[in-house]
Structure formats: structure tokens, C-alpha cells
Amino acid sequence: MIESRTDVDLAALRREYGEHGLDIPDLVPDPLEMFRRWLDDAVRAPLHEPNAMVVTTVSAQGRPSARMVLLKGLDEGFVFYTNYESRKGREIEANPALSLLFPWHDLQRQVRVEGTASRVATKESRAYFLSRPRESQIGAWASPQSETVQSREELDELYVAAEHRFEGVIEIPVPPQWGGLRVRPESVEFWQGRKGRMHDRLVYRREGEGWGTSRLAP
Ligand SMILES: Cc1cc2nc3c(=O)[nH]c(=O)nc-3n(C[C@H](O)[C@H](O)[C@H](O)COP(=O)(O)O)c2cc1C
Image: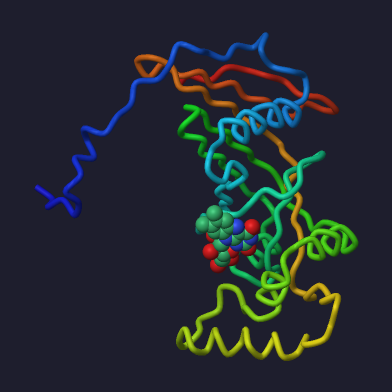
């Protein structure tokens, strides 16, 4: 028997899910509009960090990796901002296929997106960069995201160096390696928890210019 590494009884942790279901007639034709409605529910709930999502990328060697980012735009795709030279940035460059997951536990919901990422226009990244607090702008210049650093001190020195570099500069420019990625969805699944683990799973899949919908077994 494997010794447990936690005092929490993980096998006994479970929640009963609700009566309120999701059926094909509840779906609107466009999954992005459907997502916007669920995001509104998550914001209104209010959930903590309702726009946090797990982004999974796959390296050129086929090894997946996941991390959290914040959704910062919603139009014909899902937009987030990052360092293009980070691990995720490089993996997306080599293989733009990725998935997104919104884990909205308190609403007994999750949304899964599969799609393809492409860089947003420089102008768009710039507009968002300018809206960020100055500390975050400096951080974007200072941090060689995903690279190994020797210590916290080295990181702090990088920050101070970037602070000095932009002393007196009113509008900090956008770092060349930083910007947005837009995920164009190929499929979007809406999951609603139901009783007895008989959850509702409705998925949109791109079909030509439009979308087809179907129900998946939980
Ligand atoms: C709630 C939350 C939000 C985050 N938002 C972002 C984000 O919007 N962009 C980003 O690059 N990293 C964000 N991060 C940090 C990433 O999870 C990750 O540590 C970083 O991007 C490096 O990932 P990588 O080495 O796989 O490229 C966030 C982390 C958390 C916990």
C-alpha cells in the first residue's frame, strides 16, 4: 500500500452536484456568446479570479505542460498576454495547438476549449500593456520568464535595473518579447455538474462556417 502524503482523506472528498441542468435548447448558436454568459455568471457569483484559466501547450516532442493565465480579451477568440520567449511562448511557436480550461468549481461548471493560438496585432498588445500598472510593465521588461535564475536577489536586481532604465520615462514601451495570444476555438465544451455523477456535457465543434453541437457522456 502506498503511504499517503496528506492527512486529507482524498478518496472521501466529494460533493453532490445540483438539479440545475444544461440541455441543447439552452445553447445559443455561438459558443463564444455562450461562454460570455457563463463568464458573466462567474463574475457575478462572484468567483475568485473568474478569468483565470489553465493553458495546456504541447512541446514539439509531444510533452504537455499546463499553467494558469488570465483571460484578458474575448472576441472571436480567447486572448491572454505573456512572454513569447517563455516556455509556453516557445511551445506555441512550434505547435500552436493548445487547450484552455476554466475551473469554475463553485458554480459546478467547467469550460474546455481546444484551438489554435496566434499572436495578436502589436497595436492590440500595446493598448493592453499601457493599461497595466507601471510595476507590471517594469516586471515584463525585467523577468526572463521561464529561464533559470540563481536567486531571489538576482531577480530583484533585474527588477531594479529595469526600474532605473525607465526612470523618468512616462510611457514605458512594450517589450519586444511580450504580447498577446488569441486562441481561435475549434471546440468548446460546457460542463455542468449533476446528481449521481450524471453531469451535462455539451460540446460545440466547428463545422464549416458554423458550429455543430452534441452531448457527451459524463
Ligand atoms: C492566477 C494566475 C494568473 C496568471 N496569469 C498569467 C498571465 O496572464 N500571463 C502569464 O504569462 N503568466 C501568468 N501566470 C503565471 C503562469 O502560471 C506561469 O507561471 C508563467 O507564465 C510561466 O509559465 P511557462 O514557464 O510555462 O511559460 C499566472 C499565474 C496564476 C497563478
